[in-house]
Length: 554
Image (tube, rainbow, N blue to C red; front, top):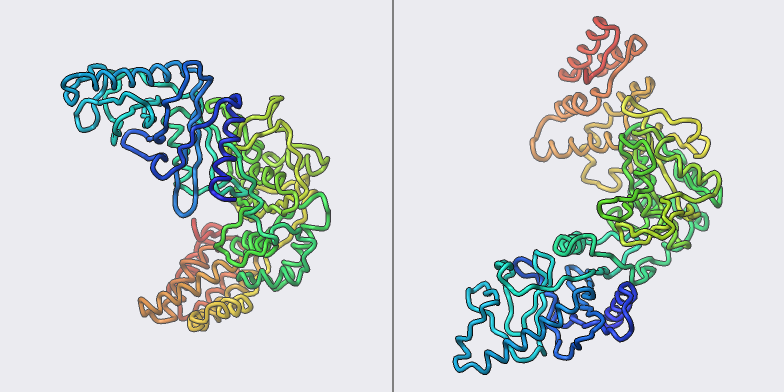
């Protein structure tokens, strides 16, 4: 779509939203010389020919654009309808004052008492015609006009100036569109800033351009249609290490029902649960980098205070008069709009809150194939992402929900109601040697650090895992990377580095009671020659003797 086409589509959408008749032709302020510019205290919408505005004009629409690197364009249109009489009068007054100045014998010194001064302190002058009118929005939310010269600042005393014009509405659209409606920070901040000028209740975002062009052909294929070997290879290429068939089991559990895709990944912290979900989704979408943007993946960190579905499905905000769209609901909307594309939503650490509380509506929809009840208004509400939010929204069959859970003292138990509706895959088995092989294969510069740390890592992990206190791939990788950093920059002895890391990263996970005494005694022997680690373990043994239990972070 070329520049002219998208400008025209925006103006057509704006005019339809405003509900003006065809006789109201939007004024196009898209050119290099007449486009929008930020000035001190507001914004210059542009320069437009208003010499032909009739007294009985129905409304005026000013179409503008702001561009932000690297390629974002924010189109916005300002409607003046209820205060159009003031605008017509202002145009006539400027002509009159311009004619008076021209007729005066000392035109250069002609002073207009009712006019504000510009930022240089000189009195504003006017022309006898309005073929080039500069239009501004100041911090007071009003439109200000002048037909000769420009303001570089709107920070003047408005109280002494000629009354300005009240805009009715401002509509905004962002290009290029994205499936998730998540934009660059600059473009989003500009949209919010417009709302701070005219009032957020007057600014509305319009979905103007179809965004299917942003989705590659690989993003329009369902996981079940892709050979699992291809997915496994792509996950491995993205750095995933899942030697126990986790990718295959995950693939089957996520796709064996055509209408419900819900899997829970359970296990120790750091075993790659979230990374499996992310890498699988990227593999399905044909994305070959862990840092590339994928508009069809939504990560939703669960918050411990969630006690109802509002954190997932949103709520109506009476202050802004809009429906708040959380990340999960945005995923549902995107999946609804792109029925031929798989959309993945990850509920990270989903048992930090009671799952059956905040997920109850979604679980009911999974079971009954019904619709999410979002609000009771018969008319769709405007959402905070610019989409229209209907009262009911069915869960689309191309929505894939993946939850991750840790089982420790910070989490809540997951009820049978939830477990019955999901496939649960345990990922507690950790392959230390295999992961180290994979890590060094990707980054050969870590070979020396791996050799220095592998023996103790394998030995201590084997002991701790027997008592349910093992550790995951995250800790193993950080252990090796710390070794590499210290060896390069601090030049410590390898044994000293291992000794430090065992205390800082591994042994701090220890906790238990009399049943774990054997673990502590065996660790005491294993840490021979590592004074810090051995002292740490012996302190835990002393706690066990004194209190009948021990906890490293007591």
